[in-house]
Length: 114
Figure 1: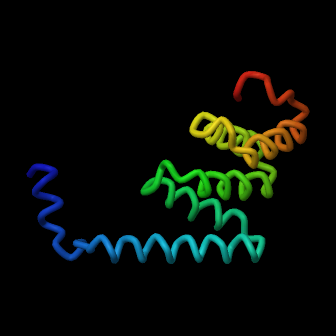
Figure 2: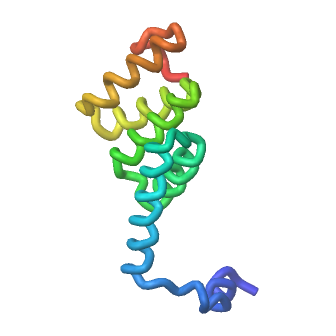
Figure 3: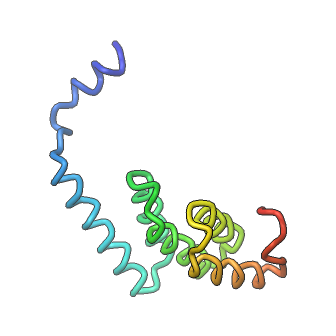
């Protein structure tokens, strides 16, 4: 059996593009509700999943890093903020929040990434 046969054997998993987008929209709404409810671990999980499908959406990375920082996962948040700055060196939110998480760790923001 080849991988293409496996995909073809799962006909029940055929989603239209609109169905996939609606699923992502619902995931974003759920993650935002988790953030409002201060359920940061749950929000982190959902934002991480969204990034798999939309790896260039800076806003999702910002939300992910914020959720991580709110759980005191400063090393992880720092890595995400640095990734954002690789994507957009002028992202003011990432610059500011990177400074905050580095300070929380007693690090200099300009030090080499973790």
